[in-house]
Length: 598
Image 1 (cartoon, helix red, strand yellow):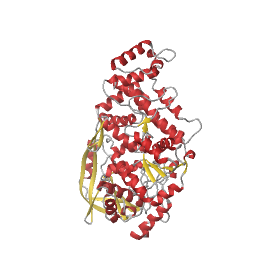
Image 2: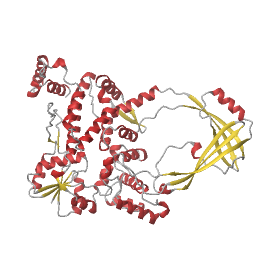
Image 3: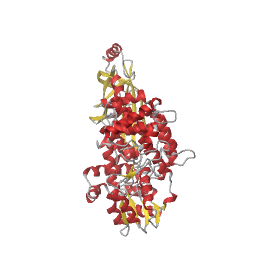
Image 4: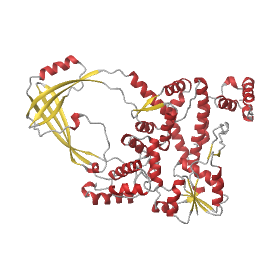
């Protein structure tokens, strides 16, 4: 048996589980569109994939290893992984005895053997996944290789345009300009300091933020001589805080960014290592479901370590936003372990302290997701001070529940929401020991962090969880945004490209259109009747209005002027003018853009 995977880092682990199997890695995409030309037929949109640089030996290795073998194609269980698997299938199907597809979602003895047992003939798999990949890959090539040279030429610099990266940059640029345009306004907050039997606490004016300084001073003067606050209403109610669902890809990237201060691309690299070591389930997912047997393991572990009080009567049910995601699982540990054992487990796999922190984060979130709610007593007290109304709020933790395992670092809560309150009854006269009128100013919206931008992309339906880390990496590498004190700030280049595209190619910056494109790709993946990757690419191409009338004849061929210019460029560069550029104005323009911006 031959198993074909993507990452060579999985080979050792798989061989330890299946010592009789041969394992070969493609090392990611081994075939792709070449970087030096469009490689897309602009009439049919058929791509011409070539062997990726440095991967020529992969093809021969796959074919040689597959001869006479039962082949299991176990590339990653997502759209990109399926595309790599399809290309591998095309290379080995005539050499192999049989070809099957397996989706390995955890690299453990049980997980691998279950995946192999559930494998199906590759011909019976969902071809819609590959078609959606083609739509994404070819559509992105059209945008990048047509709009990027246009933008670079007109802006006289090196600029990149992307179907997903551009809306991401626009979000950062729009927020930056919103911050710049913000005009702070002053307001005043009035509070009284009360003391009940040695416990001091604050009550705040129910008038809220006071915008009139004169009115605020008048209230301050009115209460200045008062010695007591009369309790008019005291209300205590029990509140519950339920645990969050286990991590999806987006939630993991956002939480790791806020708690570990690492970029999304870094958290994905660490998660990839943990997955390949067999420590976590597959890390590219938008599901929040956990397998029933693992829920049972969590409940047994929590019961033995903390007691049954920390478990809900029935397992918690978390629903994924996308119903199709329910077929998969959230990111979770592959085995239940004691927290004290984690350092040794990470060390045994030769992983780092960062891996340990991320694994612990995943572990705590998954376990906490099946624990009991935290319980608080939330108290509200209304007071009258010299005819003016004030309110004090506080919250006391009665039962920690899931907080015993998992707490997220949060910004300091408002003083009036979290303070400790003494016992007070209606009608009590509580001594007033001071008052305060503090001046504040309204604040502009905050810049995105990399984590909050990822969440925004998910909210707007831009891109997919598996692409967010690379998007963050690209927009930083292109110089469109920078990280400043943990926040994303727009660079001049980012503002320049967004202004240009907003004026000349507005569609590429529209968030709603990008969302609809992603939804259409999902329809292709689901093999919805009438949806095709060719239609998707044709729609993208048409949006660009690319073939300019002045550069083409009525039959679509380049004008004599355009053709003469192209031939002159070919002569000066010592290259051949492609045949398709002689007959297609679109192809001619693309070739010119590539040559002029090389």
